[in-house]
Length: 309
Image (cartoon, rainbow, N blue to C red; front, side, top):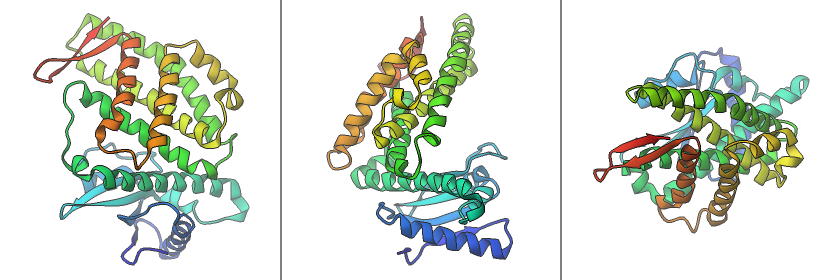
């Protein structure tokens, strides 16, 4: 049943389409009531997801984004509220259409994935709400812990939502994407490290390296969520990706990530008690930096610095 105060706000669409989308989304939410959707009280549908995030979070994300959907939290009177922002073009595909069932099923899976994020947010808020409201990371942890949190979030969202996709759909595309990233970004990162090594003042280069590493690790977490959720091996899904991982510097990180995410899931949520649950996964991310030739370090004051090998 839809929460009594649940609000769906539709922007930039004519009235009849707005009503169709609203009715479709209410129906879908009823389908997924087995998920923990507490604190989730609003959906905003707009032509640009990032513009809406900027309004709410007072951030400066790029406009004209291609993001389909994004779950964010807001704090009102010291309480965390969860809302979902949908791209209007994507939202239209959530209206069931027998003429394009493939598009609808894909959209349904993406929506399921976003609701799984909401489910995960609720479990984490229950466990460490005060830390989520006020915790800050310093030194090495300022890089490794947020990255570990992102990896867990995408992993569990795909694990939970894997039942609404097929092996040869999103999971296969994700495996192929990871293979491409390891090939292309692997070369780019090496070049960027050489540039940074010759000029330590090029902080922009290090920021680019951070983004590249995050993209690889995030995609790997996505893929592991599918593999564990569907109970299949990477070899069964895509032998080419398995081969590329085996021959890359990412091999050991992939094995450790798979293990640590599985352990975290086995303890989730009742054996989680604080943000230290991310510690081993965070260490895995710093180890990948090291394998690429960058050692993250911190001073006694917790100021971050790094050594390029």
